[in-house]
Image: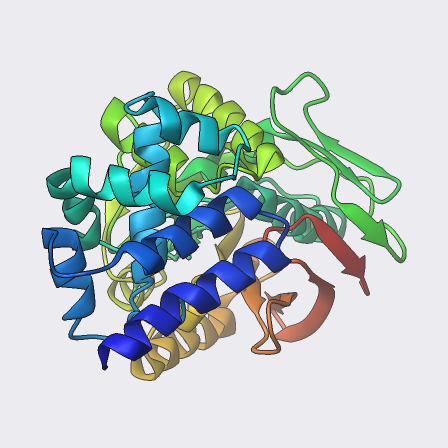
Length: 345
Ligand SMILES: C[S@@+](CC[C@H](N)C(=O)[O-])C[C@H]1O[C@@H](n2cnc3c(N)ncnc32)[C@H](O)[C@@H]1O
């Protein structure tokens, strides 16, 4: 891509941030675009970027936005801290100054893509579990693919208001009450007897530096997301999630080759993960599920719950497939963070 394409990627990201109601992140990304030149290592690496710098590719603007937010969170530069408190006047000069002052550190944020873990997505998954709990009346074995830091491994320890339905723990520090349209999922008991998660690149949140990194990738002006993440990290300190490093297709084939215990409903679930998986691996996951589904019984049911982008511009859909039988339902449509849900179930 040309230098012009690279700058365009930053400007488009800034427009997206403005439209998302995040003016601070927009100002930082716009400021970086204006400051990019060959006098810094960061500037040279960005302008010579070999892959696709856009949000749909390597997300270069958001790599650096994470670095700037990390600097602001630790109070590394007073003028940057003021910018992050919402003083946007002169933001281009502030960003250019910080880019020069912290060049080596910011350049290191280019080494890896942004990695987030959104607990708001537990809401649609919990809604699917309520349906399964009502249907089978069995406890759950939960298996999560592409779990990132594994914060949604604690989903039964969150509190929920899903339409008219209350679920989870009313006293939980993490309460999810997405804007809701349509009917409500059933009131039922969700009991988890076993849980496991995998990711090709897990974020180990036992490490304080990794926790801070996760926080930095949250946009500073998304206060609710930041509060959710803080609450989820507090829960993770008390109930540490375990996320195994594995490829989803390899793992699903292995785990589904053995049936679960009798009297347990096994659920494979994932959120905003499927589009990152190449088609051949998606096909392997599907056929491993279909094979295991043929062996499922009402005493050992299998379900596949997924909340995934539908390819129509920032919209996610909740789908549930259940075996025995292979019944497939489109249960809900919503915001990719799970903050607003239209229930069709
Ligand atoms: C956008 S993140 C979503 C993380 C989490 N599910 C959430 O909703 O917050 C996608 C995750 O999928 C993981 N991933 C992508 N392809 C994978 C694969 N083939 N096997 C395992 N994990 C994968 C990435 O490492 C990343 O953590």
